[in-house]
Length: 120
Image 1: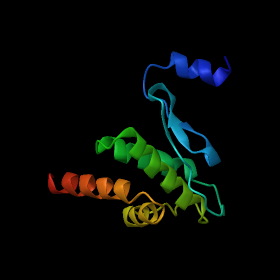
Image 2: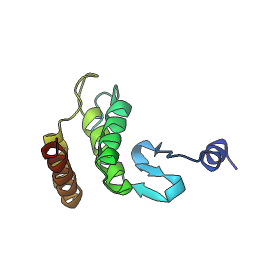
Image 3: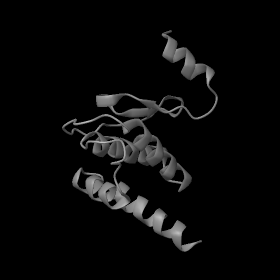
């Protein structure tokens, strides 16, 4: 087995693998999500945007595939902009997901986010 495969086998927690143009996956669960095609301007901060979006969705209790889709969208929006501090807003993510054929994911994210904010 390749080194990465051994790591996946040995790791008992949640391991998210970013595969750039090939999307992302949680190998242990066999869940994958496609990448979004955008014109790359600056990759600075793309991983941070991905991680933040994934963790937000995971904390909100969305399905893992939704978490990956939203994270891929956040990374895609980030690389299409210049600067480390230009991560997408929730509204931008929801719009991008809807335009990209993931209106169902956008709706679940919006509903969970709204419910979470109302519960506080």
